[in-house]
Length: 131
Length: 131
DNA sequence: CATGCACCCTGTAGCAACTAGAGGGTCAAG
DNA sequence: CTTGACCCTCTAGTTGCTACAGGGTGCATG
Image (cartoon, rainbow over all chains, first blue to last red; front, side, top):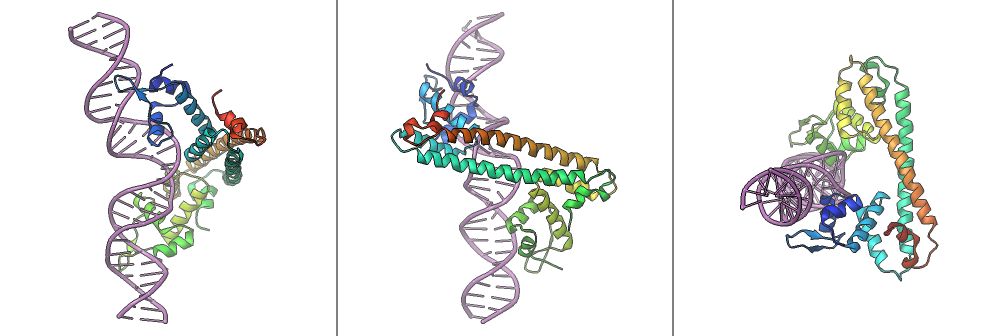
């Protein structure tokens, strides 16, 4: 089953430009070409791109995805590294949640303190202004 | 009280490069210069930069900060626009929290399903791989 | 057979919000 | 008078794409 870049894109929810970008940065190997110089993809590429996209949806960076791909290629290897990578990412996500929750509280308090009127007496502007 | 860029930076927790960057994009007005062509700042700039930094810490984008600064200059204006801007931002933050929390659950589940062994049998890789 | 349209190609530039570096000038202390 | 900390401008890099510009290909329709 051979696909053009557009078909592969539709199959994986990826734009053609993004696929070409992944190729350029070495996440996807350069595929074969058709007579008219079109990229042609098969099952292997579909699998690899699906992997990349799923990892991206889970918030892994392209560098982390690159590492995961490399690790996944060596099926005999101990999966502790994979585990550590995932745990590291989870920790990062959790830190972001904590940060954003603190932010949310601050913003909500700021907004709650504003009771309309003019900018001159606005508590939001005041909260941002010089101490 | 006159300050160099470094002193202003220390006072506001901003790197000199960032201050110059804010100037370049028009968030800060071009300051006066000393004899040796050093930027020289006073209280007004300190206040403005503090405002910017506080807004940034609250997660407002530079465009939003620009709008807030403009709004804050017109003290007679109704502060409804300020309020709307802040509420919009809060909504965005809350959406991010929801998204990240979903992500966190997925990641945690993935990690929990991994019980060591080789990459070949790793549930994390499996979860990312082709269906 | 021409023509139109959807698709593909390469290459470059742009987004946010800085950050880092090159290659130099200035200033105050010792 | 020299050393070191600071300042200057300008350019390029970061992340992960996205959006052109300016062309070529392939297939269906008139």
